[in-house]
Image (tube, rainbow over all chains, first blue to last red; front, side, top):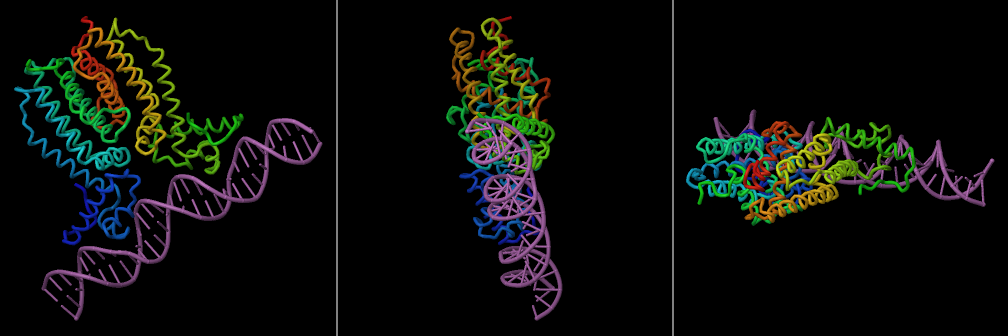
Length: 210
Length: 210
DNA sequence: CGGGTTCTCAACATGGTGTTGACTATCTCA
DNA sequence: TGAGATAGTCAACACCATGTTGAGAACCCG
């Protein structure tokens, strides 16, 4: 996904490349993306600015590589999620949403930088949009299945509902990560988001009726 | 709110100032904020770049002034909205949400630029956050009233619900404005958003039971 | 050891932002 | 009316971050 500026994979080169990424994520944990210069990325990895360009074509490319890792982690964890929507719909949705919250919280700097860069950078936008698409596909498949088996009322387009709920999650998580105001407490986020998902998918607080 | 770089209010100066704003909004309708230079803002208003600084201290200040206008328009229209939540809850929410959609769609460039600038600029963030706060206050007051009169189920914090739903609207409208993918059709947005608000506030599709 | 590839960086080029200082046009009040 | 203030204008400059070039050092493999 995220290309590098050189052809083969030599040892000390890979270590440098990795040092840049590690340093970049560390810097992003405390500063905004715009406040990190290429000079900072280079010096922190023990190289000069022009040498940085040997490893990455731009600052955005570093962010793209970091985002790629985060998204891979999410994809991996989505794949291992139990899909027990028929037996415990509320719990299943809550676990899925909780996984997203966890991953993005644990990569706060990268997440917020990537979301900010999306407006400016085609590749970041493309990568984000592809994964968003796959989460939307997953959610709308489940919603459609729930509607088909009569657990969820029809009367709303499953795809559009899935898009809106996923975008809500993205935005609410971002607000929490950035400590925006207004926002909600990090501890409350999962509970509120799940409730909104469940109420708006099932039209009720306890689908499956416990 | 949005300061200017000079002291009194003379005629030809105000016209210039206005020309900058008009030109800026026009440019933002077709280009991203980052792709508009101060040179562009100046030339389009018939002045040189240094003269621009006589009217505004920065590019962000222009955006702030434009955002201020948009928000004033929203506040004004919020004030004139019928508050018939008791007699027609679904309709009342739909009209409120529809008003936001209308205003932001009609100032597409400013809205998306402002949302992008929020991460970077304290004043834009502050202005946006203040108005967001007032919309959240409005919605949570209504939700609490609906819960108090028994129309909406309790079991969810009104404030947190209001924050999440308002953030969802912001994000979904942004996605529509930017023609992002995934997103939903502009024509479908109002319907979906209203349905989610109503289902998650009332736990039912037709509060008041029609 | 010799030719090729990896890796490095001083020095340069570019483009956008913001500043200075000198200048002109206009208003205001004696 | 005319002298001083105030509004308005911009060429030229300083600055900083990005990205490029080209020359060379380190290393590898035959």
